[in-house]
Length: 119
Length: 114
Image (cartoon, rainbow over all chains, first blue to last red; front, top):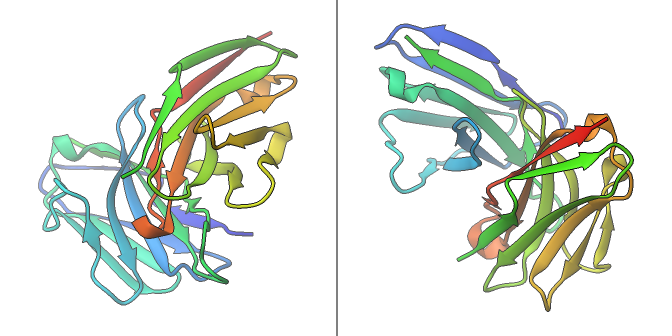
């Protein structure tokens, strides 16, 4: 159980284009989804938190107009990198959690990540 | 505010030897603690978690961790390393007061020697 599917796993595109990454919870309802960015050999950096049906909360220093997050349903969140540039190249990972029960201490379940390369 | 420190960015062990990964945390409220494993080019997989109750927590793949409040530690161990344990390991802390957001340690890369 608790499977999170992230798509695509790899994307290469030209500078200036926009890229959409999807994150789906396959067998549970994800009331909260998180988006992370990971640089090589480093830990995960939280970019934003999204709750179904409401606007995402961005971490300090993350450009909300550059990284658009939509959490339209309890099973789907999307991250769109707008007008992507080479410095946006990175490994992006989503996670999902549920508030089933008390919601206390519910773990996050992670997708397999998306390797984004901007030429 | 919460923080996590993982001692040692790299750990090398021989196959069959004990694996010990150290994690210390700082939290102003009772913490929820997690260990995740990441294989190359993949997301994170939950190994185990501590929320309340028994302080010795058993997880998948033979791993276990012990919550020691007095030492603010949550070290991860496995009695006998296997080649498949080679990966990156992350300790993380969260709290309901922080919206269940995870704060990660810097990670420890485990190398298993035959």
